[in-house]
Image (cartoon, rainbow, N blue to C red; front, side, top):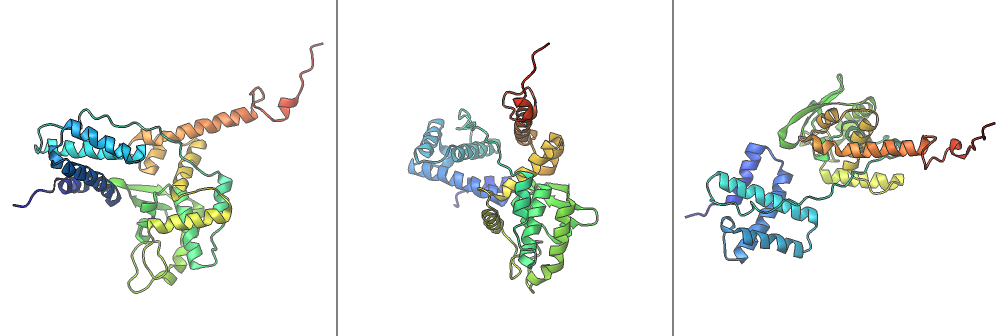
Amino acid sequence: MKLRNFIQEHLSFLRVEKGLSSNTLDSYRRDLEKLESFAKESGSEIQELSRREVGRWVKTLSESGLSPRSIARAVSSAKGFYKFLLRDGLIKDDPTSELLSLKLPRNLPTFLSEDELDDLLRVPDTGTALGLRDRAILELIYATGLRVSEAVGLTPSDLDLERGVVTCRGKGSKQRFIPVGRSALKYIREYLRVRAELVCEKAAPQLFLRKGGRAMTRQDVWQLVKRYTKASGLGRVSPHTLRHSFATHLMQRGADSRSVQTLLGHSDLGTTQIYTHITNRHLRNAYEAFHPRAKSHKGPAANRQEKPDG
């Protein structure tokens, strides 16, 4: 009799019912396979582990040198897995019910200034097909806040150049429509005119192609961002930095959190509101720099001496 693969059943449920991406599912799989290995080393099956044993597993993760973020994700994976087993009547008791989710401090996302973005976007050689492709994808990510996986998954039919809108399928297969600015549209149109140079008989249907007609991958975009940021003299920048810059610049110019949440495709407003911390800091810095009564003001008014009365 073939034993049931509870991990695979759980992952299939997440894929079909929750619409999670393959990357997210792979992360969950790795976490649960670690738990399964721990169970077997303890002489148990994964569905038979007790509260005490699951607690020991978390301790082994910490002792193995995993980062707090990786441990927090593994705990979250385990909690979701046992809730699935409990809901389907496969276990009678949830061994993670007393296991606290780890609350990690939320780091403020890094972003580029508008001048730094201009410097970065000017680096690709737009006299070549590949250079135009690179300029177009950088412009598009900054103009729309797309995730890298969303950008490389686009097809030409996802773009409405007349209306200036891109249709994106994000996490959980949720569809959203995002306006695209004039600069990005300009370079996308120019890239589409030379895209035929990258197309071959068996070319992929995606918008952004590698030489030879294969679709660009997330790793390809990471590499080109790394190459261009080095050439522009900027510090460590990732494609996600462009997404952060998109959201930050919108909020710095007065966009509300709900609108930015919709554009980014965040399911939880709390995820978007991290950008309010950045904009609050931005406003504070502006106040400190320019208000005549601010303690750190360095402008001309700070050096003026008030004349005594009379």
